[in-house]
Amino acid sequence: MQHYSLLDLSPVPEGKTAADALANTVSLARAAETSGYHRFWLAEHHNMAGIASAATAVMIGQVAAATQTMRIGAGGIMLPNHAPLVIAEQFGTLATLFGDRIDLGLGRAPGTDMATARALRRHMAPEDSFPQDVLELIGYFGDMPADAKVRAIPGEGTHVPVWILGSSLYGAQLAAHLGLPYAFASHFAPTMLEQALSIYRTTFKPSRFLSEPYAIVAAGVCAAETDEAAQFLKSSITLSFARLFSGTPGKLPVPVDEVQALVPAPVLEQVRQALSCSATGSPSTVKTQLSAIIDKYQPDELMVTGMIHDHAARVRSFEIAGKVLASLRAPKTDS
Image (cartoon, rainbow, N blue to C red; front, side):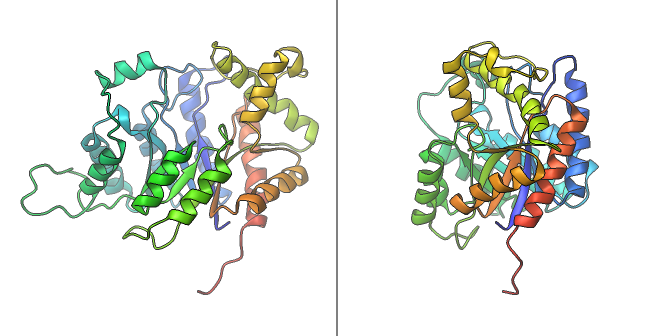
C-alpha cells in the first residue's frame, strides 16, 4: 500500500441538517489532511435524505479551498447523469483554481432511484454510452487540435486525472482496456472485489496515463478507544443500511446498544455481507483488520470511509485509522 485516503458522503445525522453535514465535511477534510491522508473524495448521490454531497463539484471546491496539499476529488461523478462537456468544464474549473490537486472518478450507475435518474437526465437513453462518454470527457481535458469546434473552457489542457470506479467486473474491464487507474467500491459491495482486481491487473494495457495498473480498494472503518465503543458507534451505519435495504432510507440514525434487536435477522445478515470489507474496534483491533485487508488484496491505495452520528467521534475515528494506516504503509524506495 503506497497511500491511504478517505471517502466522505457528507452524511446528515438525525437531528441535524444538510448545512451541518456540509460544514462537517469541511471540518473532516482539514483533520484528514493533518492525519496524512493522500486524497479526500466525495461521491454523487441524489434524493437521499441522509447524504448531502449531491452537488459534488461544488463541495470539492469548498474542500479544496479549505485544505492545502491533499488531493481532492470525486469518487465519483455518475457520468450517465451528465453531459461530458459539463463535467469537463466543472473539473477543468476546479483544476484551474486549485492546480494539480483535483481527481475525477467516474461511475456508470445513476447513484439514485430510477425516478430521480429520469429527473436528472431528462430522458433515458437505451444504449450504454459510458465508454464513449469517458473518452469524450478525457479528450476535453487534453490539448485540443486547432480546428476543434467544441472545447472545455476552463478544462482544455488541464489533464485532470480520470479514474474508473466500479462495484462489478465492468469497470475493471474498462479501466484495464483504457489504461486508467481503478477504484472498487468494496466498502458496500465487496462480493466481486477479488475477481475485479484480478481482471484489472491481468488485462491492463499500458497507456499515456499509466504504465502499470493502480488500484484503490475501499474499506469501511469505525475506530474508537475500545472495541465496545466502536461497535456502539457502528450501529448507526448498520441501522442506516438496514433501513435502505428495507426501502425506508433516511438520515443517519443515532447509535443504539442492541442493534440486532431492531433489525430482522435476514436483513442484518445482508448488511453484514455488504459491510464485510471493514474494520471496527480499538486501534489494535482496527490495525489487525486493516492489515488483513491489505495483505489479502494488495491495494496500491486503501480508501477508508465511515458514517458516525457524532461528528467529533467520526473525526476521531479517522484520526485513529490514519495512524494505523501510516504504520501499515509500504516503506518508500529510492527507485
